[in-house]
Image (cartoon, rainbow, N blue to C red; front, side, top):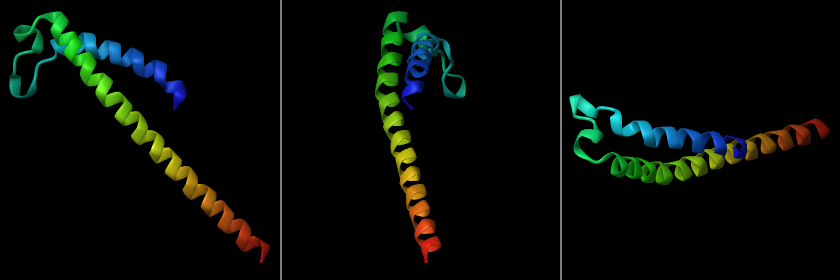
Length: 83
């Protein structure tokens, strides 16, 4: 997971720069038409800065849970083979 952090930062920068140009739901105008560009970029960056760590911790905990389950399964099979 730590190897993906630089990629996540690059994606976050690209997201922040391109998101203001994307139209909203149901044909809404892009953010760039209602806000100044630098405000839209800052807003997009803040959203990414909030969402990325949450997703990272959720993914990390999911992987740790799966690893614990596999270790338990391995332990139980080894214990069963000893009998």
